[in-house]
Length: 264
Image 1: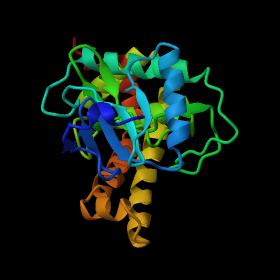
Image 2: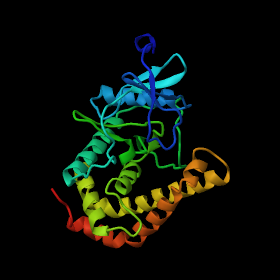
Image 3: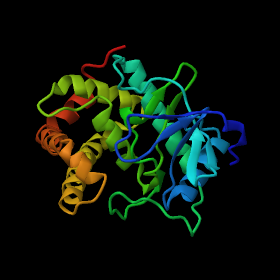
Image 4: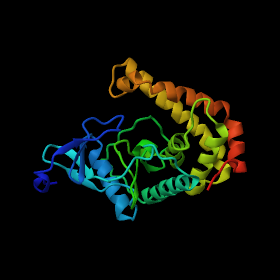
């Protein structure tokens, strides 16, 4: 895209991202480094918006400095201090379901390159892969998931498992009933059949352990941003939370099926 319309706009460094460097706001746009997957990612998001999915920012190509450009969406992130209701969690679940339905009609170009964070073969459709509180902008007019750099082929449940860990949220040695109530609200919004709760819980454990291992192995090899995330202690959350959910899997499934702890 041409930058002539933004020539007089200063750049503001944006906070909050864990893996992307040099994310800035310029006027009504966000600029960040291009990755090998940027063309495929922007093409995918254009498809989502074309079929009516509005919970993604508009992709605006590449600027004169070779950075990817996205629509800037105003509003606080989900985890910026507000207490959220079960109704809010149901709304998140409904957005994720809408995303997956929109993604199902996307035809992947043979030349597409994706940032495959984890090596998996059970691909079903293209997924965001980081649908989490730190990537959800809760604006007055619309809620929008940002940071699509990790977009890649995966499965619906793999994508949903990450949100299931992070939105309620689950904490090592936390209040299981409270987390289960939040998760049930999210899953009700998504419309997940109760017969798949056990499968989802298993994937929650797998995803948390995979994230722990990715950070730990990346740190051992000196790879960024994993070495920085290791130094910041992120692995000390994902490992214990995997153990916690695994150790309470049966009780968690029972709570989900009973619907206990779901608020308004």
